[in-house]
Length: 271
Image 1 (cartoon, rainbow, N blue to C red):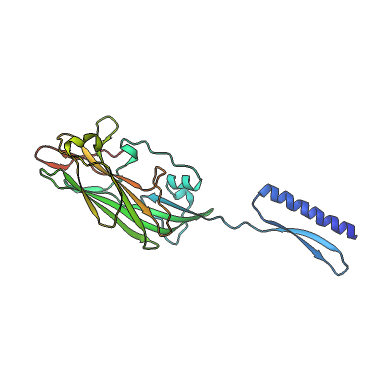
Image 2 (cartoon, rainbow, N blue to C red):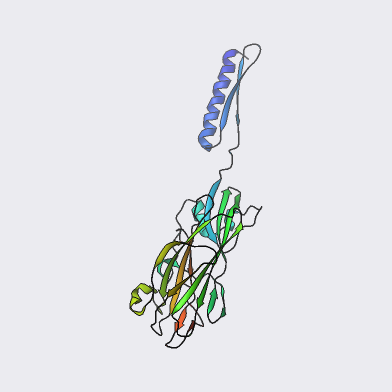
């Protein structure tokens, strides 16, 4: 092979490098030249698979991610998939102001409602799926004091589920009015009856509770609303199903008469 032909081969290899790089856009392709003892240069090329691109994402889910297991992206809540795709979550259409929803749960007595557990999750994701980095378990409890009391007591629960133990939590409080066959309102429209409206943001810790007056007007159904905002150990936030920070809990409806106050037999759920 002549020197000119060998050099032509090197040039051709460089052209193929450019073509491959142009098609893939991301695959690193490297050109090499080897010189033999007779002074001839032989060109060739090689490519190297691109390293997986990792991305951290914080979201909320009704179940935790298993540890030491890769969860496919398809197994994540739709809001988390939207975040990974770089799209804004679609704000849920709810009857409650600003998207608060009942997070399942149960009513063991006529005076206590406990939500289901919800998980604030920070995950490390790549093309294979996601692995949990830090997970925080959240819930609320609503306690109606009964008799002629017009106060409810809301307890926040937040504890480490997996990963680092350090996290920060804040809360927003709002009081809602269940309007039959119409969009619900906030208690700010019922201030004349003593209902306490919006409060927060304020720092919250595990098993902390707040006491709020929901008003004395009989035959008006009220419910509490709590947004728990979690900041993970690395300073990132958990994003809710409405694309905004925090998990929005709707409490159970409370039925009021002049002489009794207790949870209603059924409740709206915000849907």
